[in-house]
Length: 109
Image (cartoon, rainbow, N blue to C red; front, side, top):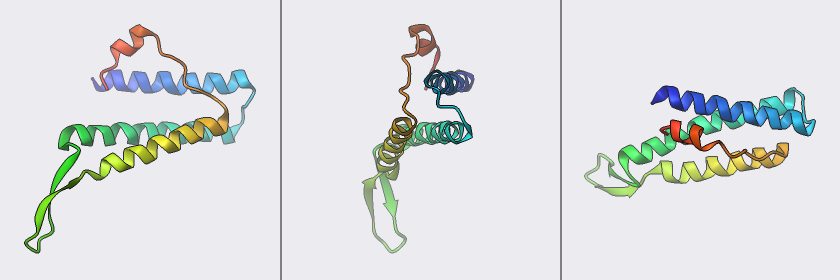
């Protein structure tokens, strides 16, 4: 499963860089933004995994005798990360391409 995620990540990164080249927006600044996007992509996937593992609501115990449940902080974080990812794509003027059905089926995120 991990290998499929790594392959999917490489496919996305390659596609974003290809689009930069096609648009004529080459340069280290733009490549750095693609790297930032991919780091955020990794973080987003970890946040979604945390939500899958622990749920949307998580228990808490503050040590002072108070306990209960609260919203998993990853829910808010994933929204912020996704928003930032979208802003990066807007800033560099590219949109993620549709991945072929076969590649999409091969990836178990």
